[in-house]
Length: 259
Image (cartoon, rainbow, N blue to C red; front, side):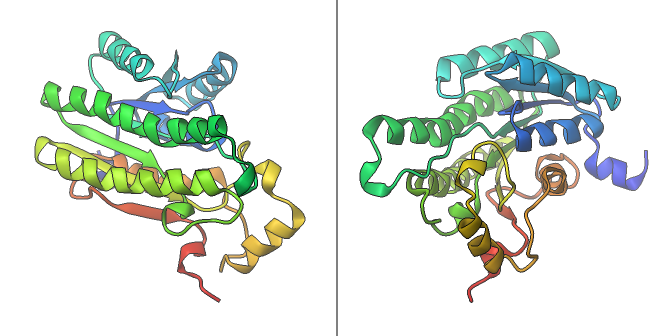
């Protein structure tokens, strides 16, 4: 095994990607499969999950689909129990399920607010509880990667509830990282910039795109595969072994820009 393989290899490890049926977390799932992990693609859509599993296997990796409702702690516990029963371990978890909305502030209904907070924040909390306990109790440790956003750094206009939820995800990440640090479990936050995906395409008007480009030094959107370097770093037992409670922004410079 080469030096780089020792740093970034996931051979023999089991990685669970909650939200792996989506565009961005699906790409993360594929990257983990290529790095040697047996990937559990977890989400609601069996059809999209099966397509992602097929892509991972076609690239030479190992994967399976598992159904989960990320807004239900009971469902996440069932997922964890199934993974341990089928594979014997959990080494890495990505918490990437989430929803967005551009509803004007005074029009945000209670049910919409509750749904976004429960999906984007509570779901991450439930997963950290469930999988974190499993990793600690097993004695083998592991790594958890929560998906934040550039809005974890500063609020973004038009997506009020989403911004609040992602800021809270980063705060939760830091708190949980502190709690787990002495028990062999690392917890970090990956904060993507603008990667056109299903949950944000509907709000990317021509004016909105122009505003984003003015604030992005690299003057372009990100491509899903550009998340893999940070993903592997933060989850790898080798390369990321002393990184916890951190946020890495993969945003083309968006959060470094003022005027």
